[in-house]
Structures are given as structure tokens and as C-alpha cells.
Amino acid sequence: MKNLAISQLAAGILLGLASVAACAAPTLKHPGEFIIDGMVFGMPKAKVYTEDYQGPAVVGDYVTALPNLKKLDYRGNREHQVRMDVFAQQVEVAPGQSYAAWSFGGSVPGPTLHVREGDRVVFTMKNRSDEEVSVTNPVKGGAPYFAQLQANLYQNNKPVISPMPHSMDFHAGTVAADDKWQSIAPGETIQFEWVANYPGVYMYHCGTPSVLMHTAMGQYGAVVVSPKNGYPTDKKVDHEYVIVQSEFYLEKFENNYIYNHDAAMARNPSHVTFNGHVSALSDAPLKANAGDRVRIYMLNAGPSGTSSFHVIGAIFDRVWYEGNIENEWRGMQTVLLGASNSAVMEFIVPEAGVYKLVDHEFADAERGAAGALVAGPRKAK
Image 1 (cartoon, rainbow, N blue to C red):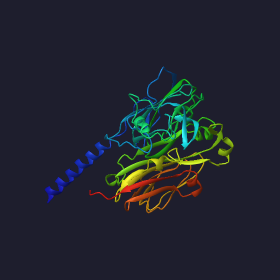
Image 2: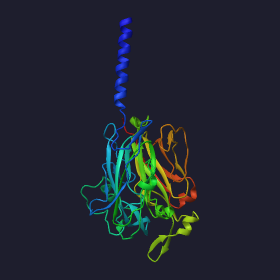
Image 3: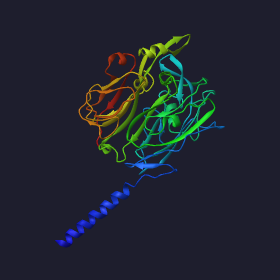
Image 4: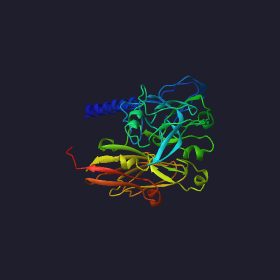
């Protein structure tokens, strides 16, 4: 019995050592960085410079177009080289209704970035608002974002020129905002680093005044930071989708639409959409089958309104508010999100059919915040 106890103790020690090795301490890359509670802080100063860059406007192995999310097919942590250039695009928000948007990467909302808690992001952004940049032509060396965007052109993207200072504010980044989120002029490039210290679903947006105007003009998107050890239901999930709700404040001007700042200040949107277009999730509905577990990474980008997200015919049996596994709710019919709030929501598709996705604040649903998930018959697993 004594030898057995010693063997069990030794096995426990080895198991503990293996667990410690698997959860290795984060790596410090630059002088001045430091670790508190296993998180890395103290990033180097941002670099602002000029470059003769005409390459892909969006770069990154885990950067996708809505509603897609690329799976993290690596173990542990890694460094991501990510580029999202800023420039103007003529985009459609409803059939026959388009405006000259300010964008990250050419779409509204912008690309979705997926990383793991503890990953490092080296971010580069050139202000190309003084040049025409196409996102519909074939591109080499770009992110998966391009092929996905080109496969679903409900926004009918066309390049336009609208010179303007811009900046990037990642809510997922814990850095000095006056340094990393500083505005850059047309022709300038900014590069900075941040570590994804906290899991969750985070908004990014332009922080240049008027922040309301820059955001309402289209400069926002989502970053999904998956928990270091994942969500408890990861092995059960059959489909993952990203939805970004947002408002537009547009008025008709000649043959196009333009931004109406008075309407934005009054919080009176002309359109409220899922993924940037009133038809985005109707013309291209989400897909699943009866019995599937569907996970939605939901972000309400605002800039000013709330979202009461609901799937007609389903109940969210797991909800992680802001995407953090410590914030778990069960059995939710509707999830209320303020501007820039988010949640990871899961539901089981009960049977084949059409499941409407709506903002249950029905005035917003009638302005366009509606879509669908189409479920086929149950498949053997």
C-alpha cells in the first residue's frame, strides 16, 4: 500500500509538472514589457511613418469577412501580423441605397480578427483615404477576407476617394490610447503591438473626432479572443457565426445617400442592420441542420443604440456575456447589449425550418435588423 501511495504521489507530481509546462508563462518581447497576473503589459511606442505600399489592404491568416470565423488551428500562443488599411468605399446598405463609407479594409463592418487569449498582435494600418483601393479584384498575399467578401457582394463595393485623418482603437488591446490609437494623416502608416490579455468579443473602431461620425460612417468591426482553454462546449458546436449589429444615419442626396449628423445626434437611424446591409442575413442566411448546436459571436457596434437579440423559435441555452467564460448565463430568450457590448450565444436547432434573427426592439427590426438561419433535416452524427 505504501509503494502504491508513493507511485500515485509521483504520478500526481508528474501530471502537475506537465500541466505547468502546458501553461507556460507568456513571452516578453521588448524591453519595458512586464507581466502581472499572467498578462503582458508595457508595449513599445507606436511607429508612425510613410511607406510605398500598394499591396493587399487586409493581411492576416485569421482575418475573415462576416459572418465567417476562422478556427484557431494552432496550439498555445502565437504572434499575428495583421494589416487593415483604411480607405473609402461606396457601399450599399439596402437595395439601391448606397453611400461613400469610411472603412477598415473596404467593407462595413470591417474584417473580423480571431486570436487566442495571450496571443500578440503586430498591427499595421496605412491611411489610404486619398487613393482608390479595390477589394473586388483578385489579390495575392491577402487575408481569407477577400475571397469571402467577393463571394457575397451584397454591398456592391466601389472605390472612392475621401481624404481624412483616421485612427484605430482596439477594445481588445490594453495599451496607452494616446499613443496606439493616435490619428494618422492620409499617406501615413501606423504600427503598434498589443497582447490579447482578456478573452471575449471586442469592438474596434476609429477614435478620431467626431468619433460618432467616424463610427457611423462605417469604421468598426469585431475581434474574437477565444479563451486560452476554449469554451466548455467547443466539442459540441457544429457551426460558428459572427454577427455585428450597427446603425446608419443616412439621408438621400441626389442619386446617393449621405451621413446626417443631426440624425446621429438624435439617435434616429435610417437603417439598423446585421453585418452592414438590411439583406445580409436574408439574401445569404446562416445554415445549420436540426439538432445542431449553433454558436453566434454577437457584437452591437452601435454607435449609440442598444440591441435585444433574439432567435425566433430557439432559446440560448448558453450565453457568455462579453464572451468571457466567467460571465455565463443559461436559458436566455433575448440578450440585451448596449453600444460596444457583446456576447457569445449558443442554441440547439430544434427542427428543420426557418429561424428568424431579429433585434426584438421591433422598430430596429423594421429598419433592417433582421435575418434568418435556414435549418435542414437532422443528419446522423
